[in-house]
Image 1: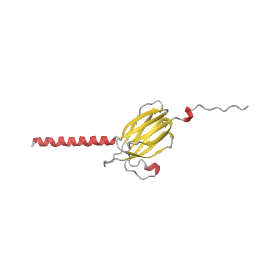
Image 2 (image 1 turned 60 degrees about the vertical axis):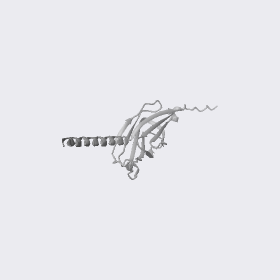
Image 3 (image 1 turned 90 degrees about the vertical axis):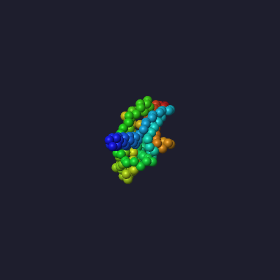
Image 4 (image 1 turned 135 degrees about the vertical axis):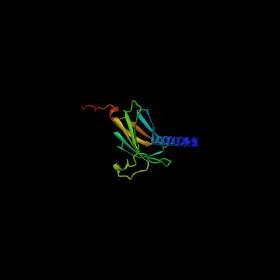
Length: 166
């Protein structure tokens, strides 16, 4: 009888540890951020641990703060956890330093756009140290979002001078 009473607390501790481990693994939605550059264009790939669907972003194509709105399309039905975390990113010559802050608060979409609360809402703020020209695309794998930082046409091109009139 003494042996059974010791096994019950041990079994409960293992169940609690398993539950906590599952919550931590589900809570970390943003798995990795990769930055690559090719011919003056930098590709920032944000890889997620679950499938995501791109909804919209703001501003359209130029800014220091980029707000991305996504929906997490998890196949598992899990309790929603309100999460707010940030990730620092690798340094690359073509891209000014930036950080990514993300939130899974259910109504992170609603206040700014008067949209109904989206189940599985994921809002990302990408904050650069200076304004960048960019475009955003859903990754073909369904688990990534691609942000392309484009060369600034104003700074990369020498200013042309008009020929003098005679």
